[in-house]
Length: 253
Length: 363
Ligand SMILES: Nc1ncnc2c1ncn2[C@@H]1O[C@H](COP(=O)(O)OP(=O)(O)OP(=O)(O)O)[C@@H](O)[C@H]1O
Ligand SMILES: [Mg+2]
Image (cartoon, rainbow over all chains, first blue to last red; front, side, top):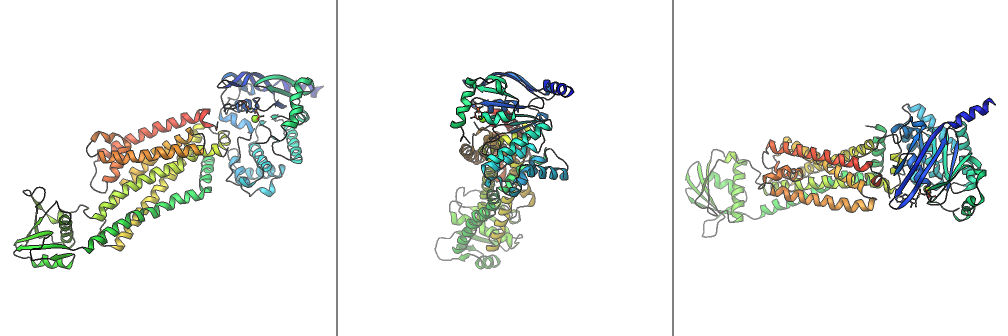
């Protein structure tokens, strides 16, 4: 009873709140009047077909781009969007933000870690921790350039984890990963959730999302067409992602 | 100023060691080759053909022996002489030359140089031009003759400003143009934008690294020039360089200040371009255009004083004048103020552009 109340109070705490957010590119409405709330400590899934507007929405949340219309708050307005503080608070993994290809894995992590850790020893132990979590040891001294797609993705995730952000935003994190690594990332997400982090991630894959999330949002052509528990999705709403699993399964960029 | 991001930029720059090394080593070859080669060749050429001189009246044996020891040949017959000497008394000699004739002019220069080198200052020299203005008589005190009248030196002071400008422009293109567009190409620009830094900090650090690397290229260029002078003086004693270190420092100051402006221009272009390919075109065309404008306006500056307000013209003018004659302090001050204010304007534009998502992203 007590635990339930704690969970409820924790859940009611909105960490990200979007209010009628719209983003236009010329005539295309990449994001069309979306309002949604993400609660502290939850794993939130964004489901949508190619070009639905998922990445655009996440870019707005992380302050990379400005919405054409609408507003949003982070942590109840305590953290100013786009501020340096917000950049520490939010960690964004996306295929468009690659680790530095000319540097080694170690150098990449040390470099990005140095924005968060002033102490060299602390930074070093943090790097070791992440590297063993993601099983990157064999590649630590290789240039990122020469790594496989999956290992590059792991480095991209490691780069964001090093700052230990409160909110993790993962845009198609399973992209290019093999089944066992996908399992690792799933475990990692569960582990981070247990630490009290908030996680938002996108996918075209229903199964992937169903396993991890309590609540999802479904975006279609820029609009939010569903929000709630995944079980409540109607059959019609599910269809694109069931079939899409077969059609888009190999979609990797 | 964030040290971590500075280190990131620096590491990426040095990791790209082929182009970095090239920009540091290239000037060390280009200048010796482009200055030392023509100068040495021209002065060697000069040595081969003798100048013919005639005496009229009383002969000064000191002068005759000095001249015949060098590249002069005395003629007595009715051959055409390059230069005519006339002795009136023991310590005075009148030189008749024809400014319309190239050989005659060179012969006069050579005689003057000999007099200076041999310190025959006590000799009173009268120079009469039989060419353009035959009636004009010039009283020349030999020991005051200290202008760079060597052909070699003239070539050097012509190549130096051009070469320096070229390296400043080239440095701006090579170091500046890839700084943002390269990141767009490699899909790492968003990685930078997501760091806990403001966008103005990011772009200013990128600019700073561009300026530093550009200045390193210019320093290497000056090293190349000094190297060229050392080589020249090794091969020929016909050319003397009397550049003072003050002149050297002054020209470096002009070039360094230019680096700030050109770097800012190319970082701006780097933001405006959507990828590396586009910036290559932008930067090369605009860089070359600026170079030609600078060289063209720099030459016009002697006649059109108002051009002094344009830093691009003034920088070319200052660089070419510094080695020839004392330059006006006012010109230097105007150059400093105009360059700094335009640079600040371009840097402001740079920050404004980088804050626009249209330019900060690969679209
Ligand atoms: N910078 C841009 N300029 C113009 N149009 C854009 C831009 N970015 C996105 N769009 C358009 O906005 C729409 C949404 O794109 P977005 O990348 O957000 O989709 P997505 O849901 O992430 O798709 P995917 O699953 O393929 O990653 C697309 O139609 C896209 O073409
Ligand atoms: Mg996407």
